[in-house]
Image (cartoon, rainbow, N blue to C red):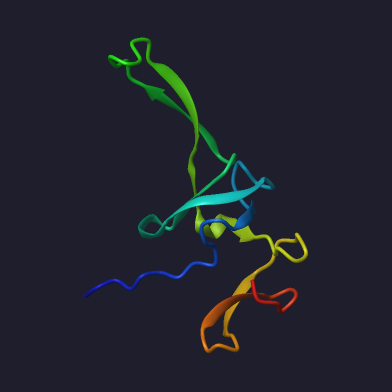
Amino acid sequence: MEKKKAKFHIKTGDTVVVIAGNSKGQQGKVTEVLVEKERAKVEGVNMITKHIKPTAQNPQGSLVQTEGTIHISNLMLIDPATNQPTRTGRRVNDKGKLQRYSKKTGEFI
């Protein structure tokens, strides 16, 4: 049986706030959504240190700070109209397409 592609409340480019975990309260822009793992990378949030092996170009090796992923359920969308975190829903717009809307204001996002 084939697994259906999940629809998330968050897309690449959205501004979100972290609502749980070590980075709770931090805001940032979503740079990547990993659909199969249900995780997202958020700019400047959940920073991890990666060890880079020495190579011919970089004989010293190094430590690099990069963003780790955060589970989608720990992120909440920031409504662009009010700059407040909001839950989202889907409803049909005037063109007949499903579109996200803010449950706080009722406006389409």
